[in-house]
Image 1 (tube, rainbow, N blue to C red):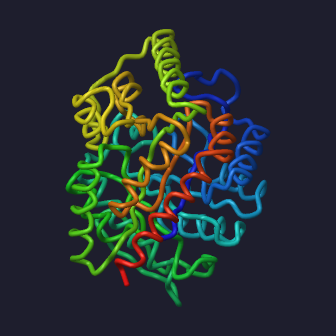
Image 2 (image 1 turned 30 degrees about the vertical axis):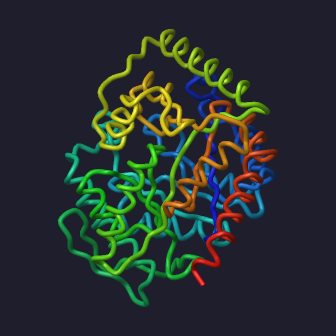
Image 3 (image 1 turned 90 degrees about the vertical axis):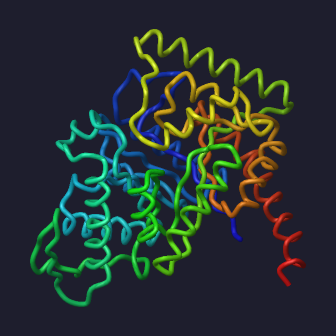
Length: 362
């Protein structure tokens, strides 16, 4: 398997340890982050969806213009933009970037966040809508003539397929969600299914569950997993950095009056359940920030030297996970650091695992 490594670009400096206090959009910072990802050897960078932040497709266009080969994983929420317009918007971005766009479909896991954008559907209805939305996008992207569509959530007539995607048959779909409703949609549409950083046994179980569901539709998705690696020259230094990150996260949250509330989405619930097993699981999977924040996003870390973290990722690779989304608590600094040590170590280690497997496959 060829390993894919994804980072993340935000529109302004800041993370859990250092909440942004300046303008919401910092074009210079976006350019620096994009070029740092490209220099570091990332294959793609995630552009997140935030109901209180900059619009992702425009940030993605800036990233595409600032780089030559870096792929873009655009987080996109169905229900905000009508499907025919979305199809043209995304195909245009794919053309501008010469096929560097992939779509991270986010149905939404927090009711209050969704309502900021005028979305009041309940959990299962959101996934029904997502299923229909992706059907509509794919039909427009692959059509040879205008498209009619009549569904429960979307209805349109003679939608134009004139704006073609650069990639064929269409822009790749990345998808996440661990509920039954989410997995059924993922089985039908996901080219890559995305998991947060859970323990090995939980990941193996979920991977098998998605594989089984996808087989019913004759599909074989790839699998991605997300971590917040904390690396240093020695293991002792790495754990000291982890302690410092947790101290800063707690101080920042206290200054903002934030408390860890029970999450609504199943993915966060799974992370918190894993955190009950201990602060450290599977030798170096650290749950400290997940516990402190209520695990509302990918917040688990692998802690150690670059070689140790690469070996830990290799255990997930052996389960069939071949895409790693890695982002740090020091966004720009960690991006550079990963390029210097972690990304080369990941590529060496997974290549060695492939070599070891080759005789067995033969």
